Amino acid sequence: MQTLTPHVYWAQRHGEIYLRVELSDAKNLDICMQDNSLHFKARGHGAKGDNDYEFSLDLLEPVIPEVSHRSTQRLINITLRKQNECWWDRLTLQERKPLFLAPDFDRWLDESDAEMELHAKEEEKINKVSIESRVPKDPYLGLKKGYLFMYNLVQFLGFSWIFVNMTVRLFILGQDSFYDTFHTIADMMYFCQMVAVAEVINPLVGLVKTGVFPAMIQVVGRNVVLFVIFGSLEAMQNKAVVFFVFYLWSTIEIFRYPFYMLACIDTEWKLLTWVRYTIWIPLYPLGTLAEAVAVIQSMAIFDDNRMYSIPLPKALGLSISFSYTLKLYLALMFLGLFINFRHLFRQRRRRFRSRKWKMT
Ligand SMILES: CCCCCCCCCCCCC/C=C/C(=O)SCCNC(=O)CCNC(=O)[C@H](O)C(C)(C)COP(=O)(O)OP(=O)(O)OC[C@H]1O[C@@H](n2cnc3c(N)ncnc32)[C@H](O)[C@@H]1OP(=O)(O)O
Image 1 (cartoon, rainbow, N blue to C red):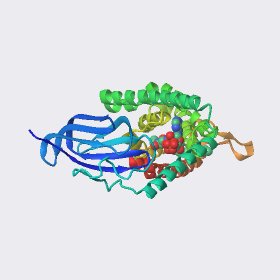
Image 2 (tube, rainbow, N blue to C red):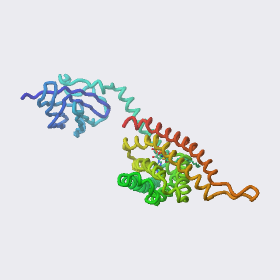
Image 3 (spheres, protein in one colour):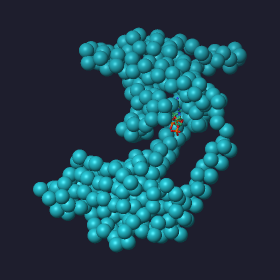
Image 4 (spheres, protein in one colour):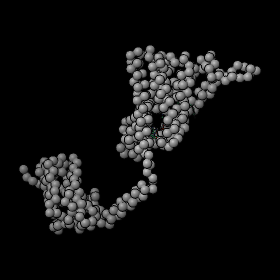
């Protein structure tokens, strides 16, 4: 089998020499520097098919003997570092250029262009350093991220327990599971929703960069339904609507909290991000609808038992039923849905428009 030379393309900068060896599926690479000569040997598919290919180049000026190279399926890129930062008139010691060597026009720059590139890089480095030094580092960043990670983990575990429990019960008991959801799930839901108050506090104290108002709508909205409607009316507790409200709440949270957990460790899973910023589109209106059904069902009960009713002076009658407050709340619910739907839509657009999302 004959030994052949591959096509080699070269370009330079003040500090480096770049070589591109046109050899695909290269194996048994042997690239080294000896007495300022570069020796290359490999087996691969080049201009003459599958063969052993090799070449040597006596370089014009001294280079650092360590060679760095990276091979792809199509070619091998070799980078040499010049010992002195200067512009070379040519690559090789001998004046006549070897036949297999040609300029790499994809990377080729003349001396003045390379100088401009160097200046631009230096300027970029200086700008980066000055921006970094101007923005003060937060000494508590690790602590804040640790707290947020733990908070999200606790919520994720709580809502996963709720979701899995409800799903298993639905498979085993079928529709019967609808009617005792509250008695099996409520304690965990109470816990998760009480802890969720932190979701309003976190943006308030600047721990997360998001609006306080959307979080307040979400937390207050859910807690009214959980504590006031379901929690204080026993007659509501065995209604099927509890199942739908709890199931819709937990479905979004088993994606939202892991997404935040990953954000705390500066990681992103594209599929999870997509689900977090998409699944609310059907779930939020459905959740609000289920909550509205619960509010409407509770009105007649509040009318009967007069709980939370506002006492009136005798001349005006007995009291104003809490159901009037709930009617007002019902209107607020749809206003809240509109505000948060718009907020989430903006968050979604911001997220999917970002350069980072498009590049990864
Ligand atoms: C004044 C009170 C008025 C009361 C009125 C009452 C009426 C209310 C009626 C409303 C009825 C709705 C009831 C609810 C029903 C349901 O939930 S149904 C089920 C479906 N629900 C959903 O899909 C909503 C899910 N909830 C949310 O998405 C949030 O709670 C939200 C507040 C609505 C939006 O979240 P937000 O934080 O604003 O946006 P994000 O894009 O997720 O985050 C922004 C950035 O902040 C970071 N971040 C946020 N939280 C954390 C965290 N815990 N840990 C770490 N990081 C966090 C996040 O990573 C983002 O950062 P960047 O990536 O850098 O942008």
